[in-house]
Amino acid sequence: MEEYVWWRDGVIYQIYPRSFLDTNGDGFGDLPGITSRLDYLADLGVAALWLSPIYPSPDADFGYDVADHTAIDPRYGTLADFEILVEEAHRRGLRIILDAVLNHTSDQHPWFLESRSSKDNPKRDWYSWRAAPNNWISAFGGRAWEYDPVTSEYYYHLFTREQPDLNFNNPEVRQAQLDVLRFWLERGVDGFRLDVFNTYFENPDLPDNPSSLLGRLGLPLQQHIQDADQPGLLPFLREMRALVDRYPGRYLVGETFGGPEAAARYVGDDLLHAAFSFDFTDSRWSWPFNPRYFMERGIRRETLFGAAQWPTNVLSNHDLPRAASRYARDDEDDGPARLAMALLLTLRGTPFMYQGEEIAMRDVALRRGEILDPPGRRYWPFYKGRDGCRAPFQWSAAPNAGFSAGMPWLKVHPDYRSRNLAGQKANPASFFYFTHRLIALRWIHPALQHGEFVPLAATREVLAYQRKAENETMTILLNFAKKPVDFDTSTALGHGFASQDGGSERGLPGAGARVLFSTGRPEGVVPGRIRLEPYEVCVLG
Ligand code: TEU
Ligand code: CA
Image (cartoon, rainbow, N blue to C red; front, side, top):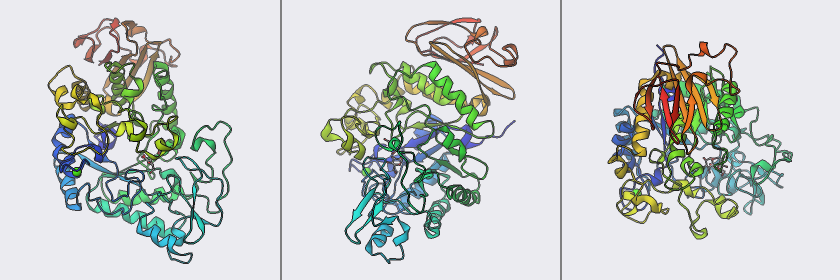
């Protein structure tokens, strides 16, 4: 029996703190708000909470511009509030993962204020300064260099101009950032989500990037061979891992904006425990929401990661349109969102659930004047930014969805009167209970946690795969169609995924397979041929 590993077998729940729960009426979610909902999160069945940045920040990029890496922004509370949160979370068996934003700082960070003050300041070299810019571009549009009149030079920023990039080629910078991690490890933090870790290092000579012929808007305009994935990165990740390994049970998950290849490359026993690959999120419209899309990406990812490396499953986060909004054909219809949730919780990999995903919250629509996110302001109407998925959590039908007694920092989705947690908790057929039951099923079936992934079939309507552990095999059947579809579980092969060893040895569910979970039928024995209900999620074991 393989032992339970929290970051591999459990669900990690992302909290966007400013939109979770406000307890003091300033319109801004806070740490006491999170602490007061730990019982809810423990009951939901998640294993860990990843908190988006909670450090002091002028909010040029909503907390991802950090002005002090080892303090709490007063809007969220105090260090004492944080210590209470960690203690109360641990008491309930919940781990705490912090968002480590190390690539850049705020332009108000004391390090940058020093660096910009003069050309011979000891921290000058902590950032990248040049008399003239090279051709690098910012992820949020335009050139990545900003002229600073104080010393008549330009500094490099991958994101907004208020987020100057640190120069990781300088050993003092690397040491300072390791000290940041140590500060939080000493306070009991269980792990870190490393914001854009593959851009820590730049080529120290700062040569131009070649342009990309396929590129459209933003970063894809160039091949990022000089400003990302530099040779210094692997040794530094090893140092980070060695530090974290001095504290038992801790975890590093990295964010890259590359594909699964980039992610797999940085995961290993002496590197990161995991890295995000957003291979299930690049569908901005519902057209790729079909069985073949998920099967092809699922198989490709298996090949890249292999048995030794552990992938992550991400369908939504604070940077993307929510899966429930991406895939919904209309607002009332939660069928596609159920399929997305089933994929998140049953594909091989650690599920990262984004706050509100458990009740199928939708993105809020904003008028132009309401948009806050910098890339949204720049590119509207071609790209409306990331505010939509950041709207406050919908707790109840009370004013402001029960999020705040004050004026919420961002508009609450107007559907909160009909879609909210309290309402769903009162209804056994709700999306909340669907999520709750599926997480519970994961807890009791090791195959769903760390079993291998066995593709079975991807027809026009149905996606079928298995998760296989030592002593159990689970079969997942998903009907992507809004109509009933006949599916023969005993002849699931023959759709392009036939194995070398033939179907019989792969333990296909034939006569005698039992329904353990379904949105379309009672639990019990299934015949070989079944009629899947519209959008049915069916787990056999
Ligand atoms: O994201 C990095 C990143 O690649 C995205 O910002 C991406 O460029 C964007 O979603 C495209 O719309 C991380 C954080 O998740 C993000 O919130 C921050 O803005 C960014 O880093 C800078 O810290
Ligand atoms: Ca508050």
